Image 1 (cartoon, rainbow, N blue to C red):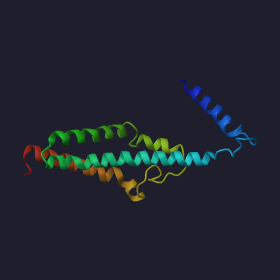
Image 2 (image 1 turned 180 degrees about the vertical axis):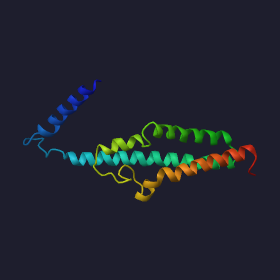
Image 3 (image 1 turned 30 degrees about the vertical axis):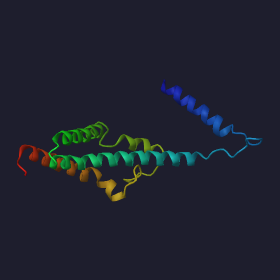
Image 4 (image 1 turned 45 degrees about the vertical axis):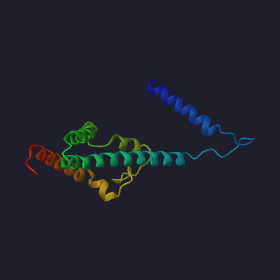
Length: 149
């Protein structure tokens, strides 16, 4: 679909749904509050972002755990999953694509405006979990090579 078509359809639906909503009659109801929709959409994006974050954190933790269990095949899979996310971040100016989506629904730009994390953790997320990922990879390599018991 052409982008201008999508905008046109969106505007038509907005007009029909919000501005042409019946003011009286058997189905008369107050028009939906657009800010409530915006808030619900932001909560949805934040929830999806938090679940995705949890998945990647679990994958980061799973790399050294799998290596400890000598399941190097699983360690490689988990490391590859995280590497995929690292590449997505690298090609998106070191920002999750969900951040751009969340930004459409709020003017808030605190570090955790797009995810259900404490502000201090959202601010230091890449440093903390990037370090854990690298350390997990080093441990997995050392375990695989036999340098660590």
